[in-house]
Amino acid sequence: MNIQSCVEVRNEWDIVKARQEGRNIAKELGFGSVDQARITTAISELARNIYLYAGKGRIEISNLDSSGKIGLRIIASDDGPGIKDIRKVMEDGFTTSGGLGAGLPGVKRLMDEFSIDSKENEGTEIITTKWLR
Amino acid sequence: MRIPILKLHEYLLITIQVDLDDKTALQFQEDLLEKIHNTGAKGVVIDLTSVDMIDSFIAKVLGDVVRMSNLMGAKVVLTGIQPAVAITLIDLGIMLKNVPTALDLEQGLDKLKQELGG
Image (tube, rainbow over all chains, first blue to last red; front, side):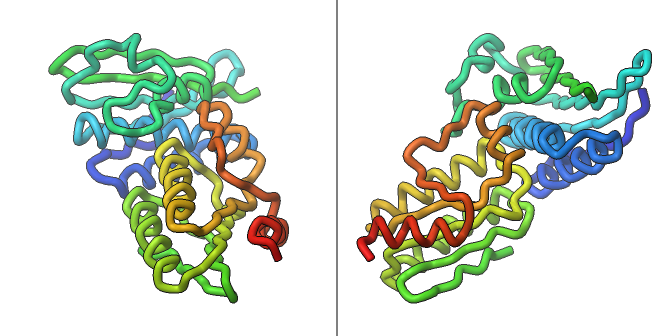
C-alpha cells in the first residue's frame, strides 16, 4: 500500500480538492465512470463529515494491490468529538446537521468495504475500499 | 465564484459547469431566487450535463431550490443528469422526490411549456 494523496480538510474548498484527487486516482487505476462517481461522492461525504463535525481532519487515498486485485482505499480520520452512537449514524435518514442523513450509510453502499472506529472525545477513523472489477 | 443565470423570454436557464463547492451552491440558491423575484420568470431549467458528481449536500441544495422556487410561483426542471450521477444518487438513497427532471435542455423547456400551458 502506498499513499497517493493526503488532503488536510479544514474548509469547504478542501472537500472539492479531496474529491478531485480521488477522481484522478480512480481514473488512473482504471475505474469506469460510474465507479469514479461513486468514489468521488464517497470522498465528498466523508470530507464533509470531517468539516461539519470535527472541524478538521484528513483524507488519505491509497491504491491497493492484493494478489492481483486492484483497489482504492480511503481513510478519513479526525481528532474531533467522536461519534456517540455508531449504530444511529448508520441509519438512513439520521442527521444532527439538518442534512439528508444519507452520508455514512450512503458511503457504505457506494463502496465495497467499510469500517468505522470512533471514540468519544478522541476522534473517528473510517476506512473504506472499492475494488476494481 | 458565481454561477451565471441567463434570462430567455419568461424562462431562466442555468448550466452548471463547475465542480460545485458548498458556498457556490448556496450562493446559487440565493441568486436564483433573487433573479426569479426580479424578472418574474415563470420557469427555470437547471442543466446538469457537465456535473459529474452530486453528493447529499448538493442534492439537498438542488431539491431545496426547486421547492423554494415553487413557493415563489416558478417551476423548475433539472435536466441532463448523467448516468453515473443517477446511479450514485440512488446508491446514496437520494430519490429527489417531486423534483421534475428531463433528459436534456430541449425536453426540459418542452416540459415547462406544457406545465405553464403554452
